[in-house]
Length: 293
Image 1 (tube, one colour):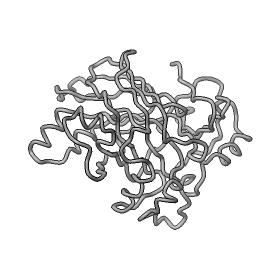
Image 2 (cartoon, helix red, strand yellow; image 1 turned 135 degrees about the vertical axis):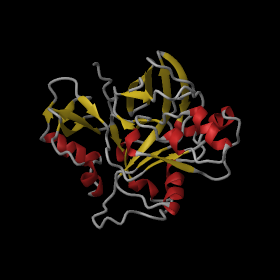
Image 3 (cartoon, helix red, strand yellow; image 1 turned 90 degrees about the vertical axis):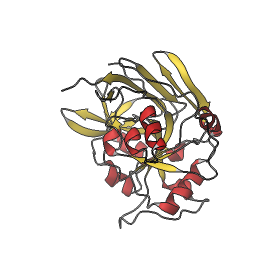
Image 4 (cartoon, helix red, strand yellow; image 1 turned 45 degrees about the horizontal axis):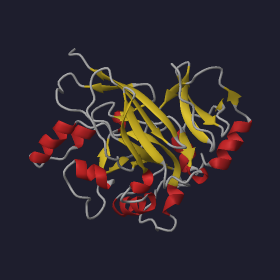
């Protein structure tokens, strides 16, 4: 499989598999991919590592990859996947609603996460609409040797808890979501079906990139459906982190998805999705309808 390499400019990290073993890799600003061996991202993120200088230091002893990597998710055991809802005004409008008066968030489960190239699997019993939602995602990382996490962040320093930026696709069972909302039920199942969270593959070091105004887009079968800029987010990254940390303890390895722009649309069996965020990279996944066992 041909891999979309990370854009040149800032160092990034990724995970790949060699002989069934999960291994850490570094993508240099030149685009060269290196294997650096260590494989526990949560330990590294809790050390405050995987920033620009640390990635460049790891790369000094790295080994060039012999061929295209078998990419894996950048974080496999996050304590939380938190997602902002209706964080682009045009997206709120296409859903027939106004921008919320204050931010709101929902959660997805770990089992939603799948890497670049893996299929999004629609359950055999689900015969109603399933949508794509391309999003900028934050991977949190900060020194947390005592394991207490962070609460009540200061707006001036909130960005310090972000280790890197990556691409996320918040797949949503749209009709199922509407049915649960009509019955005043939470929409957890509509968001958390297995494989409904493609992510990665590259996590660009946060201290090497300003993610406040990047082009974000998604195409299905080569036709662009979503195309916007992160500067159009209603709630910016720092303010989102302040809001979330008021309600939840943030921990290294947590994933925060910043909401999707307008242009969401239905997916069908056999579709191919290509999500891209400027200076961060490309996330490609297919869609497969499961057959009854």
